Image (cartoon, rainbow, N blue to C red; front, side, top):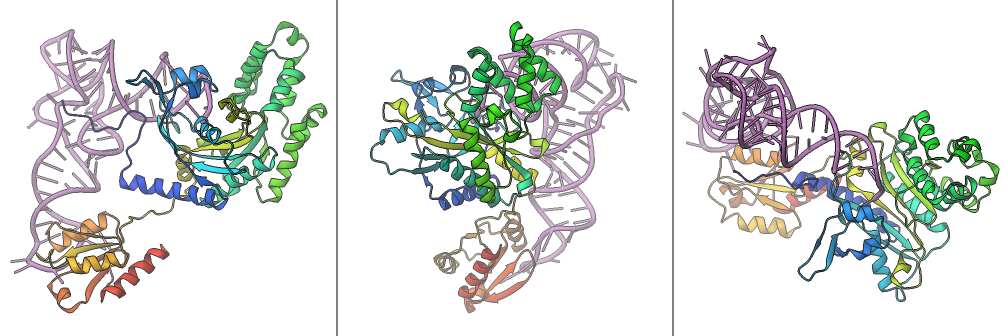
Length: 436
RNA sequence: GCGGACUUAGCUCAGUUGGUUAGAGCGUCGGGUUGUGGUUCCGAAGGUCGGGGGUUCAAGACCCCUAGUCCGCCCCA
């Protein structure tokens, strides 16, 4: 039986054309992050199991990670997310780092679960974090950066929504304002998370089922619905509007609007799954109903660094997956034409590979990326190969050209041909590359 | 982890209620005379129909198992 050529379940091969797209996406992400003064870091793909047990739900660690025991009996996990790792790194140098600390990374992450639209087993995720800022200036900057990322990809404000809420606020609503016990709070959090995907009546039925008889009698579900159906902070019951976090969030949204972020809104259904978030949380969703998934999510997690036994560091950060980003760009037709990194394809007329080495070295020395066809096939076949590789310029080298130093340069897009010396050829190809 | 749909040539797919040597388009390769691609023309190669088992005189088609892909659910990094 022949070996399978398929990549591992839920993971992708990146052929050169796929890698071009990845390089474009990552390049844009890096540019925006560095534009805001964020520095890139990285870490091992393997981490000890303990790192995740402390802060993530047990089900996630046990059933949704790749884990194994190594030869030294250590429990090892292939990282399913970057936040614990970066917290570990910051904690390790807690005293010596210069705050505010602005870091980013684009790690590959693994999760053991069934692949589906927008969710694979291996994906890459931009992680951006700011450490050491306790005030909402940190959230403001992070949201601004997020918005810049979308703008850098050419997205318009009506293509995506930045939705904000507060974990601290929701805890208050569920525990104090509505009086739910801890089990109920967690059930309601999950239900509210799915609210936008459900019919209102189905939601009310499920919410009702979670209430005790006395809560039902007190009309708790109606009270809940009136909170959840508030379209903005001003629509909330007055008692909730004046909650400290709502006051801060309200001011933040105003500041963001002033800074040119027109599509950031309060959305009470944004919950986020993780326990480590401590206050403001946010998501960015695609406005295209066919890609109804959160593309990016994050928030404030002030407690994580402190788990390593050092003084806690207030932190705001987010993760942004490459799969959902690619879906977004494709869906909104935002992908540019991506070309080969090879600028020039040299075809040889006749058996002259040895003699052609000098001009090839000169072209490379002057900075062009040059590939040469070594097949010895007919000229037409060599041209076909250049075309198939998506390389615009072809240079013909034959006895004639070697003799007079004038080489035939052909543009495969226009079909035009011209003869020049090597330096002129380099400048033509380079100018074209820059205008692409 | 649970449920549903699907799997036929390199790719996208046809294949009628089971019935001879399983088809198309695109792609690939060769040719239209020796230094010019995309278009066009001619020709060729390429499939034990995902794998295994069963029903039948006969299975690509029906049944069971298994793998993979996709879509939901759970969960969400």
